[in-house]
Each structure stands twice: as structure tokens, then as C-alpha cells.
Image (cartoon, rainbow, N blue to C red; front, side, top):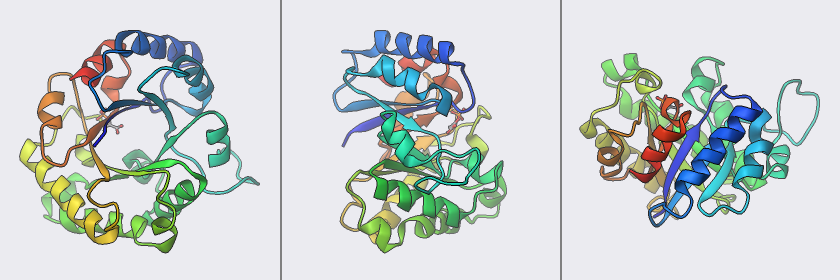
Length: 252
Ligand code: PEP
């Protein structure tokens, strides 16, 4: 299975900063990536075209969006449609990143709508799920992850539109941007739960669906994390902003 190393730049970088960062990454990584490894860059909307220009024709690099609104076009001030992203060269998009859920109040249902709509439009969708610290302390991780997966994936729309690809990112909310990394045994346990649910919800692709880990991934923990069962890649926030640290992760 392909290993996906994704850089979520969040709301960082002007176009010139994005261009310089993407250029440094391609210089450091092109031709050096381990076999079956793919680098996915998720810049802010304003830098998508710039990054597309840098990575165009570069082996092992892909472009994606951090979010979108699930409609063709229309009166949705401030929003961006999947068709606009495809037009810029995006092959991937996130749905349900924890900051969308917790800062912007996106519900499981809206995340599910985005996931189904993005798949229907031909984007490879990365569904982000994860428990908060309170949920972890209350011992309800299994329920939370299963609910988030079921609400997004248990639909005929999803089952009928899997051609462009699906990945799941397990990102414990308490480990995102905090410097706290989940323990290997916690990651192993959560990824096993996700795999089990995927096999039940989408038996035709459950086994080969990539499950990424996200939460304070750094150059010094990447090889341990990638060695855990059912970890098929990582989603990196803070450490993806610097070419040195992200390229060390990408090669790790
Ligand atoms: C993320 O944004 O998905 C993330 C995991 O951030 P960080 O690596 O900074 O924890």
C-alpha cells in the first residue's frame, strides 16, 4: 500500500512563501523518496495555483485542499467548490479536520455531506476523525471514532463513488498542534478500531484504505509511527511548514 505523507499548511504562508517552501521541498525530495511514497501538499486556497506550478510534473507530489463547500456553485459567500479545486489541479481534499469540527462547529452530518460530495466529484477524500481529551478520559474513544466513521461512510452515495479514492486520518484532537504525541500502543489500538470499522462499513475497500496518523508528527518520531500496524501515512501540521523538518519526515 502507498504511504501518504501529507503537509497541512493550515492558514499559513503567502504565495511567495508557499512558492519558496514548495520549491525547497521538491529540491530536497525529488528522486529521493522511498518507493510507494507520495507527498501531498495542502496549502491555503490562495496558494493552490502557486504550489501547483511548482510541483507540476514532479514525481511523487500531489496537491490537495484543506476544505470545500459541497455544492456546484452558487450563493455561498466565502466558500470554494470542488470543481474549482479540480480546475486548479487538486486531486485530494480533507473533510472534517478537527479545526473545522471544533473551531468552526462542523457537525458529523456536514462532514459526511462533504465527504460524499467530494467523492462524487472525483476527489480523493481524506476523512479526519479523532477524539477529544475529555472523550479519551471518559473511555469513549471507540464510540466516537465509530460514530464519526459511520456518519460519513455508511451511505449508498459513498459506496457508489469510491473510484477516486478514500483515506482516513486518525488525529486525536489533544495531540494536534500541542506537541503531545499519542503513545504507540494508543495509535495501534485506534488504527485497529478504524480498520475494523472500515472492513464492516466498506468491505470492498476496507482492507486497502489508507489510515493516516496525525498529531505532532516530527522528524524524531516519524519512523516509529510509520512502523505501527495499520499506519499507512501521516498528516503533518506544524512540522510541515519548514522544508527541513518536513523533508526529514518525508524521508523518515
Ligand atoms: C494537523 O493539522 O492535522 C496536525 C496533525 O497538526 P500538528 O502536526 O501540528 O499536530
